[in-house]
Length: 242
Image (cartoon, rainbow, N blue to C red; front, side):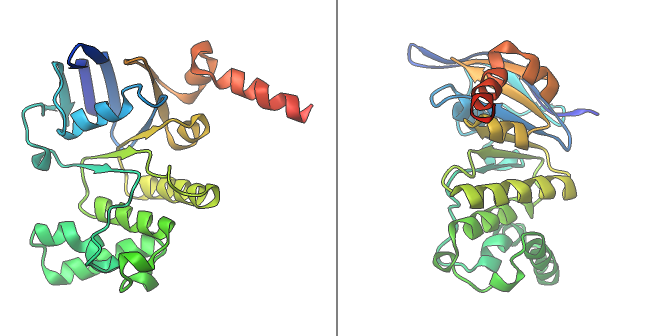
């Protein structure tokens, strides 16, 4: 399976501080890579560079085989999702999801068909006319996902998208995303500081520590790596079971 994203030898500094050093990362088409790391490790900076919101000091970024470092953010066909849903408050759920299609001047008949299909995927067909302030946190995040996915981006960048949700809603959103990723054949980088979430969400995992990235080819390799912290966490929880 070919890679949709490849990052080669990427460095980023802010003043005298090195935030990212010699980053190499690959993402296969229709796969999700979890990007794990503590706060301040450089995860968000890397996403912003891929999206075009920051620029690296050195290194190359290839999307579908094309170097994109000098391409403007709006032309990269990448969608960046934040922890906050950031819905347009003056638009209802239907129009929030439809926003990208309308920018592309999609025919009205197609807009209606695609948006209603997306709302079905999201389990929210009965919420189409509700405004953002009438939706719960989890519902707003669903609509945010719908707005992102309906334009069929080459790549989704998710920056701790469920971090602001309660544990029950967070689990439901994780399940929904896994289902949508498979149904819609999504390619995504999923940033989280939560070890369990990284394991649940990713087909493989990369871990950033002090600006350095180590990517594991699969979850088994991640588990076996003593530096990943997985075995330590398993042993920690075992003491409460035995």
